[in-house]
Length: 183
Ligand code: CUA
Image 1 (tube, rainbow, N blue to C red):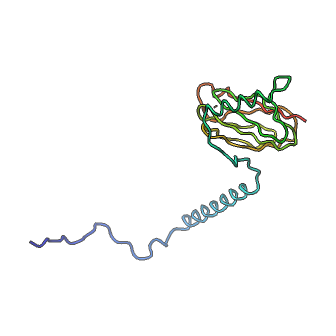
Image 2: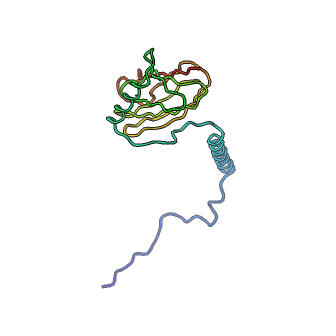
Image 3: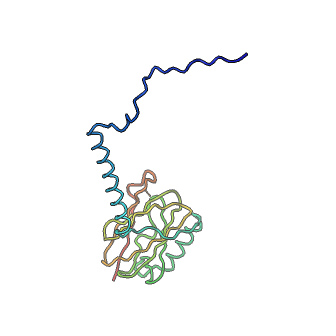
């Protein structure tokens, strides 16, 4: 038996051709404003990307919480000075461990005017490593099982505050450390 097709009818009156081009003036002004704003924002993003001195980790390696804890503890033990502070020898790398709710070693001492690379990893959950002030643009997410390398070259001696800025538990707000920059 042949099927009987119902005639196609629509309750909607078809729009005349070209209807979409006839936007009112305020709609067209709005579209151009949005387009212009998009171009401006894209330009600012690109300028910010190339002009600003971003400090992002350029190297990372995998590790484990146990290995990292052993490594940093052993390294800190070998580089503790007579005053009990852990000092990164100029030209060498330093190692930092983030754990609920502190950074170790704290403080870590580095030389002013010398490029120093710090390796940082977490031994539990996600933490942050953010230097407050000092012209050092550094704001990192520190994940466990990965060691991140950052390079610092602070010119001004002083004690710089480091805060954790990833929520990591009830003690998050108090998680901080220090970088001491010496001549
Ligand atoms: Cu560690 Cu928040």
